[in-house]
Length: 148
Image (tube, rainbow, N blue to C red; front, side, top):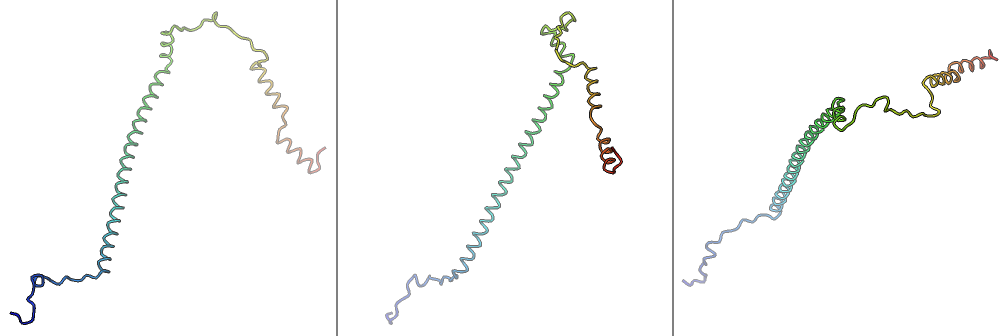
């Protein structure tokens, strides 16, 4: 069988032509895939951050309501502790009692105006202060030439 041609080898028999894909089309598809992957990653990051912030907000709201409840309880406790009957009972438990008139000591204060003297000095101050309407009227009369 030697007619000048070489017999076909096994690799020639099974070799199929590989379709040639243009490099620019493949590059475009890879670029589109990379852009979609980037957009997906950004979306997942933002969704994750939003979910975390929502959970943090819920925790803070729970803590706020808990603190408000505690504050209301403390305000109620203070109001109960400030009741006159409770204060009197606690003072008696500590050995305190109301003072009698003989136990009181009065301290004189010099130059302290009495309420009557304070009222009198206030009236004098008002009398000494000129009435702004009267002063304005006098200026108007003088400007018109009818006054002294």
